[in-house]
Length: 415
Image (cartoon, rainbow, N blue to C red; front, side, top):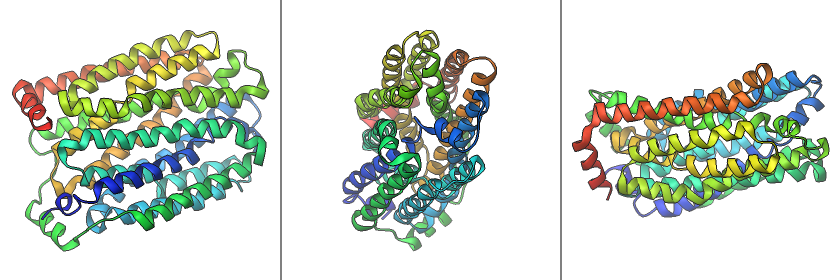
């Protein structure tokens, strides 16, 4: 009996816990976004250009660390179980998040954010667990629900970060975040169930010891991983410096953190409204159609963000963009789930997480550099162009390596 069959009775329960844990940890991680530039200034950085670039580096450091270690954690999940990876991520993030509140300078901030990425990654570990346990025909829906939990955390986090520093101070906010992640760790330890048979899964690896993506699969998987990177790049290219953009739109300094939190939350709110529905749509009509359509729609919505004159216009457009971009990650994870063998699911989903977090590294770096040297408006235009190129690549890969017959069969199996 394989891993998903042994855990068929647990995946709904585990999905509930993982949604809660992903929500909690991402609230803690995202609530620093509105005040990150202010914290950088508090740590001794003065010029606006330096604040923009250091904010982008500090924000991207966590995702750089996760991009490096996600494949390793995925492999270890295949060998030793998915639950230990969830517990490891939650405990590690709880400790490091608290330490960030003790940073002495911006170097400490960047180093601790990097360590958080290297040892953390609860949301990505949740995707590995649920993606491995859920029946393949329900993968799009389940991963969409899990994505909704993570997006809800990204929604609430900036809102919390907009007002919490006024109550407990910027440094105190990190201690609150660490405590929230500790709650997620305890919940995971107590309630997540997993029937992991190391010997049985090892025999499967020995019997099927061949590289994934052999033959015609490797370009398909490569395209999906590239698309996952682009999704996060598009979403994060502006968010680490959005407080500066809000200031350029005329928002007073005293209100910038709060307004930035609202604008960031609008993107997550839009995604919450559509993530599960678009995941279910991918189960019905096929993941490729959802991916290409969402990429093109997101590119269209990205362009007018460069020309807004009021902060509320940006908030509305970010909300619409959240609705269009929400279907991408569930559809990508579903297609990868269908493309790999059972015993290698954790490893390949680990690569998926690595690709996503690479996008979260590259996005802020691109946004920071373009924003500092060319102006923030150009960030939106460059990102939109990249999304169109990514949509064209996916359409070409689908037609070149799958074709109508394979695509039809995939839809029938999903239905």
